[in-house]
Length: 368
Image (cartoon, rainbow, N blue to C red; front, side, top):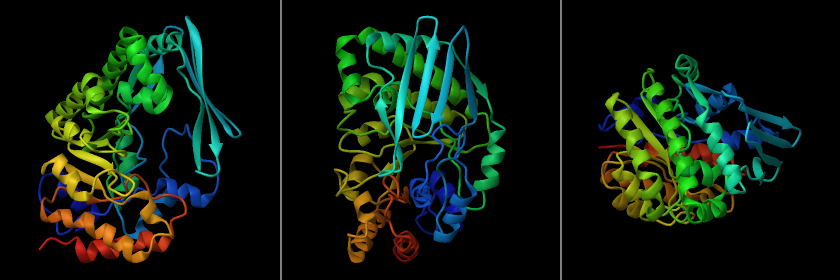
C-alpha cells in the first residue's frame, strides 16, 4: 500500500498493512532554505517540499491551501503587506482601523507577532464589524491543483481556518488579552466569537461540496491555555458543528492539537472530530502515548507522536528510536493511528534522522 492508501484506510475506520507515516516538513524545509517565506501567500504548495517527502518516503498532507476565498464589503478594506522583515495586516473600516505587525525571526525561521491586532475593546468592535462584512467565495476547483501535487505522495488536507476563540488566542489577540476579555467585556467577546464561527460554518458548508475527502482546522489547541472550562463555553459546539457537517457529507476532519493534552483531548474527542493532529507526547507534551490513547478513546485517530526535542542531534539515536517505537506500540490497542511529528519537524534536525523514521515504521509499525 502507498502512504495515501494507508491513510485513507485509517480514515475509513479500517486497518492498513502498517501505520501510515506522514511528516510535517514545511517548517524544516523552509529553514534549510534559510530565507524568509511568504507569510501571506494564498498557497504554500512547493514542488521542493513534495520532492523532499519522496526522498524521506513519507506522505505529505499539510500546507495544501484552501478551497475558498474571502472579500469584504460595505467600506471594509483588508490588506496584507510584507515590507522587508516586517509583515503588516490591516482592517480599515468606517468605524476605525486596526493593524497587526509580525517581524521575521531568523532564529526560529518564523514571523513573530510584535504588535497584536486586538489590544482594546474598541479594536475588537472594529474586527467584529469587519468580519460581519466578510463574504466567503467558493474556490473548490482548487482541489484539482492540490491533487496534482499531493496525489502521488500523500493526501492534501484543505484547511477550514480557526474557530473564533482559537483565532483570538493564537493570532489576533494573544493569550493574556483574550482571557481578560472573557471577564472584562464578555458580551462583546461572545458577539465576535459567534460572528466568526458563523462565517467559519459558511466555509465548511462550501468545502464539503468539493471532492476533498478530508479537511483540517485548528486553534493550536493546548489544554493549559484553553482548558475544558473555557473550551466548553466557546468552542465545543463549533467543533461539533464542524464534525457533524463534514460527516453528513461523507467526509472526515482533523483538529490541530499541538499543545498540552491532559483532559482537553477527551473533550475534543466527544465533539466527534475524527483526528487529533500534531499530537505531542512527553517529554515536550504532558501525556505519554498510552495516556493520550486512554484519554482520547479508541475511536479518535491519533496523528503525531514525536516530541520536538527528540529530533535534535543532542538526543541519542537509540532514545529517538525507542520514542518512535513507544508511539507505534499503540497499534496494539487501535489502528486509529498515524505516525507524524508533534507538531513539526523542527529546524536543526538532521535529514538522516527524518529518513530513519521510515525504517522504524517499516519494522515496528506493521500489523500482523
